[in-house]
Image (cartoon, rainbow, N blue to C red; front, side, top):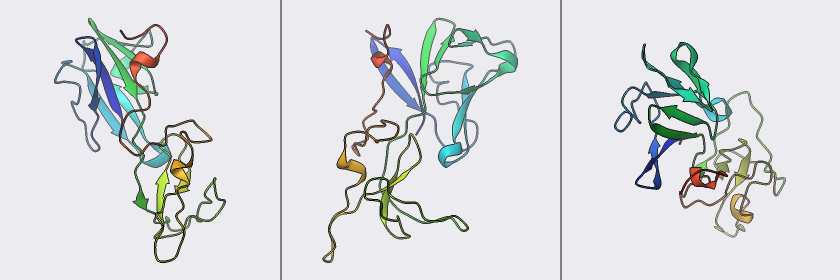
Length: 176
């Protein structure tokens, strides 16, 4: 799930941008900034919305017309506050269900098809599907997602523990 990171007392803390309609996820600490999530799957994203008369900068450039589609690791300056947007989502194991009219994906690790009913993970970074099944009923486990520490295509962390793989202090020249 997308988040906005804000430094509080020298520690970066994420504020989750919930799914659905306009939310004021960051308004608790930064009055006037609103973040909107849109789309699903690989077409998901977030936008920064500013009310009339409110100014902010994204990566040093002014937000024109009060709207800016955000990209992963964008820096948002608002008054004396500095925020970072992260598009990173936590990977989760789900029961795969193929969309009608779309062919079944092939797991990039084992090269087997990901079929309806399979336990699988969609990489939050690149959108590829990987098997992630435990051994059961005489079938071997397929821990394709957690086989390596990162996705082999986009380097998104494969940990299933919910810990953020990217944090603002990882950027050169930022943080404590």
